[in-house]
Amino acid sequence: MKAESKNFDDSLPSLSRALAVWEIVSVFSSCLIVEWVVLAFAGKNKLIAAIPVLLVVALMLVSHRQRGETLRDIGLRTDNFLAACRLLLLPTALAVLLILTAAWLMGYPIFAQPWRARFLSLPLWTFVQQYTLNGFINRRAQLAFGKGLKSLMLVAVVFSVLHLPSPLLSVLTLVGGLLWGAVYQRQPNLFALALSHTIISLTVALTMRPGLLYSLRVGFKYFG
Image 1 (cartoon, rainbow, N blue to C red):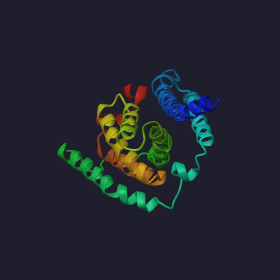
Image 2 (cartoon, rainbow, N blue to C red):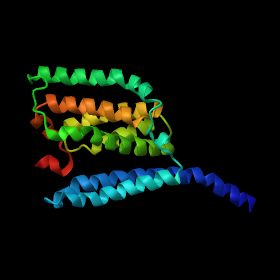
Image 3 (cartoon, helix red, strand yellow):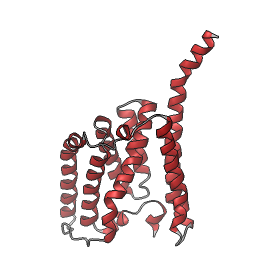
Image 4 (cartoon, rainbow, N blue to C red):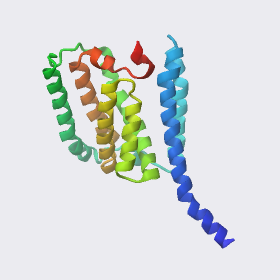
């Protein structure tokens, strides 16, 4: 009986890692279904997309509860906000500079794109993305593969694939996913990540011509 109990205890870490991978796949596939299937057939009734979204949110919340993760663990905290911002300051400034330089080289007027009312919701949208990407997927990737390159690559690839079929946007989000994922693993703060994400996204939206990135559309919406 003792030997059997020991073997069962030894299998727990493997089961936990397998469950973490399953959770990542579940959230990732649900997001793809919304982007490529639900929005394709929803027509004007966009509220139908709320069904799989709410299921994903429920899965993540239940997972946090089952694993005993607190709001502080997830990154909903303020004590390390400045520390996270310090890590993000240089790469965020560099990203903005590169975007402005690229626009100038392509002959685009800097910040010439019109302001749109939907930009007001950008901070909320970037926060939701950072919570899903880092507050959940990054944490599960660390459970499965540990901190470092393997988990960071998984986070970045997931974020990039979710921005297909836009080739440029998928490349940008691959780099962004690596950056934000690495900072999160050092200083988990979703507010700082969302701020960096908002600044970069707003720079792209106000500088690049809509046709270049198809107005930041992804999934089925990319085609019209």
